[in-house]
Length: 99
Image (spheres, one colour):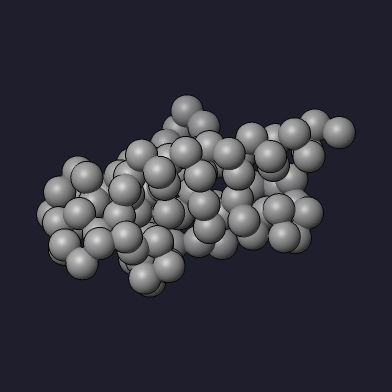
């Protein structure tokens, strides 16, 4: 599933499409997972360019087992923890790219 970019910030992971998951909680979690995946790849490759084009929503869905914290299908992960991890990785990337 292709990512449609927001016009404001071309490298910011946009809100997921409504058909990605049935609830906003799940969609927000998948957005955070995608942010983590992109930041991890950028850090591993030491890339300061936008990697958003190299990722898809399907990759966020496929990565769920790695981030799953519960067997409850409505709450398979903790979105706040995912956001915190994504924020930390993005801050680390920004710091490395600022040097």
